[in-house]
Length: 553
Image 1 (tube, rainbow, N blue to C red):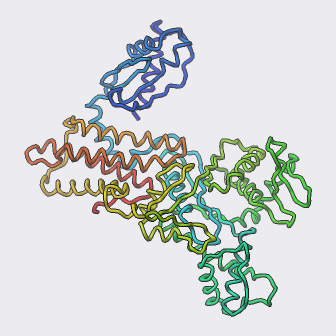
Image 2: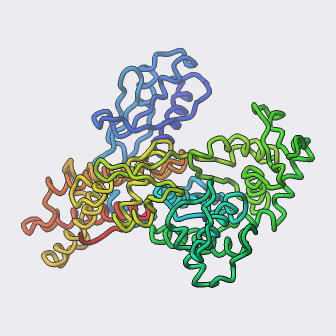
Image 3: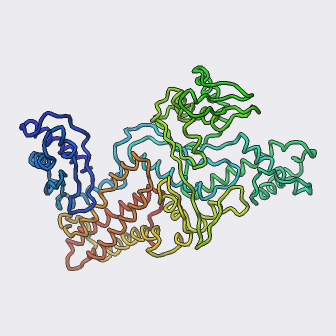
């Protein structure tokens, strides 16, 4: 990336200035190269002189002039300017910018790739909703975020594995089993109320009907006896299949599906607890087993095994992360959780640290909820609500691509208001339509060119000097930098905004520059290269989000 090349040039300028005696032998801080907000301030800039001023005993503006004077020559840089109070601004050369069109075309989808991760093994776990009901829109948000983040990390040079962890044991499964059994009994005329803490959604009736078709009345037990486990397992299997199908239809696929029961079957739970117990962090009192997090600076201890003998979510997660780090040996683990798990974050982090795992290897992203709207109407998405709108219903109403784009459009810590009516609108007000239409328009231009300019190959990109052409190239060059930034910050929500900006710059180019011009075939060939490069970058951006890049709209 040219940004990194400029950073190397600045470092070389510092070394030259020191050798010339124009700069004292002082420690060099990290060189940060940024993009100014306004193009007249350059394509890139550094504030290094401001950071060196005190140590060097010189004015920032003078240090900037010194650096500019010692900057090594580069075909990419047209000029270097120093601006108050001490910025060094770099303007890219028009000729170099035009040359990048060929580089973008040659790289194809690999243009977005950056060597940040160096093959580190990263796991991204997301959605992981209990298989006690169909997925809702909030789950779709984490599906869009997790799958996009995984693709971004892969493009950034990490070895990525995605995982769905589902609870096939524990208290919620018990509630689910009791609920489906109540519905099952009702089908045979029994007075069997749904448990107060049960799942009220109509889907539970459907599951009971499926069970009746499968088992007849063979699962009925004498009144008062507990629900048969076989019925609960059957229901969990059906819901799990729903979840798999919904995610697949959203374009989200996992490398691994991990069952909670595996934590116990593999002894990961026992081994994780043994490490904490050996360190004196597992104590028994009040009939329960506690993780003594107060010894690690927390305000209160955490229950890991209830007085009933059932492990808590925290206990299971301790074993699960023992498996992630110490058995499967991921270099880094990224968990994406809903806001209702906020209180669970610090205890798990303390457990991971207590197992001698470096704390920065675990990142837990907490996200906020999705509010679905249809006009002024707010739609509930609670799994236990009878009027729940499922993720499948949202996909069927607005389509996979709109779901992915809108779910991804805000940072994880911001709530999303998803306007279903806007997502279906075929107009420029709908950013999904706007971005995909840009790709379709490019495809149309290329098809027209094949008819009117049969010999459209071999364009000379040095002819690309129009401001709208150069603006399009500049915007395309931002993608690798964006991939690196998103991989560092774990914030893939910048991607849909970039795609929209790229589409805007392309549309502006199209309005200002005739691509297929019978009177100027040489310029047409050059511009066809440019639009082909834009098509590639736009398709790559959409692909990183899991969205399609249509050739027709």
